[in-house]
Image (cartoon, rainbow, N blue to C red; front, side):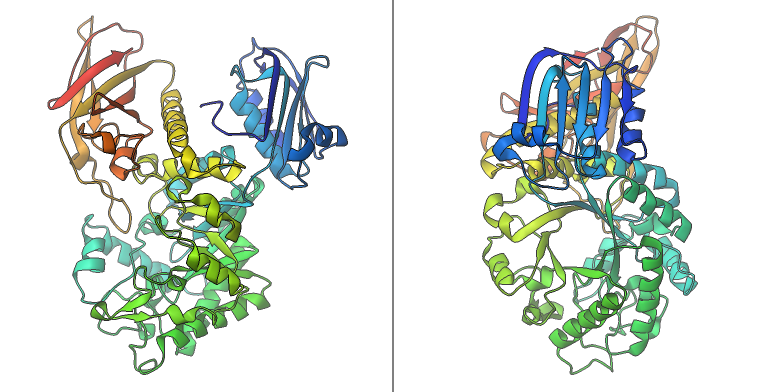
Length: 605
């Protein structure tokens, strides 16, 4: 990892560089997760480092406040690291266990780097209170992968997660929901084209995106979901379930077709808000979700609501009134449970994705919901790149509280100008948590740049080139370190050009479509090994101009290979330094034969 990734409010480095030994003694807050987190990490530290006393304190004493001076803030997530040469000790302070977790993560990051010294003072607190990630429920086989992702979020000091439940968790009151969800996903998952064909090419009306990735085509038990929730909460996360309501309700209307709002739709996605049965079913679902999650907040969805006033019970009614009425019913029900509502706010912003109506696609105008939806519901602002802040200002004046959603800080123009209207935000994942999807859907890239920005007191978009370099280095270093001690690095490029694709909404990666060849490693004893060249993962096309270089322009196709490779621009050509695990580390490499159609610039063994 890049030890200097974060920008700290105070980083006062004096004395000589030190390496913390795995024999160091840990004390204080032994019942906390921060203690076990740091204790487990220390076991992996090299034994030949310096032995220190490391102590955790759930407080920030007055001496630290005096050292921090004007940077000090009475914040629950503030933390401090103080290394004392005289006492041969490292002290970690925070008023909360969550803050101590961040202090521990910082010490782990710095351990073994030149930046950790025997007279070090670090003080920091986040710039944004809500630092979250929105994800799908994992499939049963990917629960360990999901937990590893949570550990990564912890390392980058995130504190909130939204988990879409939908049909992907067991419902004991309505098992038919799970049965129909599995049946539906099996039909969608036949090939990568099915979901997109249904959504965009089959009907003349707009349809919701299909969340085929939720549960990875299946569902997990309530006990498995409880285990996931407990895993997150133990690590200091606020866990928010998302129960898609009104729209994205395919998991409901497949099981209860009598609730389908658009009768002619073979793949219905919207329930009837005029039928009392809709709420009997929905509130049963919510009850079971609340029992499992025990949350403070619940995301009620309501994004991409395109089908309104179509069924016999709703025909002739105002789409705005139907939309708002549904929200009020759900919000009032949640209040009886002591739970606060969040919802997606795409319909609150004029001029985007059907908010002002699209008659040719049968989408109603719903901008009139502003001022009618209760202001005690937090709006998840979709945060489109290029959006100015005038509509956010209007919503704030109307009394709405907002949190960024679908967020990527580095691509948000004039970030500081609108930041005062939000208390943080969520990066959103509409695909798989598997690593190849996390990279190619830019999830790792977005998570890291947003983590940096949400902890930075002075980030502006003028710093985007610097941040891009930081993230690129961090991702590649992390990937390379994961391969072990014997790594082959190959700088390569190709003239092959493939269109960038988002792997979500039912579109999944078919490995053979992206495997464009293999480099052959020739060892001196005659052994050969193949290293796969995977387009979009560790290589892309070479063509670049001064206006489209990796530092000058944030284009998805330029960012996609970050992680398994390190893209860089040289002499007008894009190169990708790709890291491979050496299949035979004890053998001597004689040469490497490049894959057909791939140019190799340099090899490092």
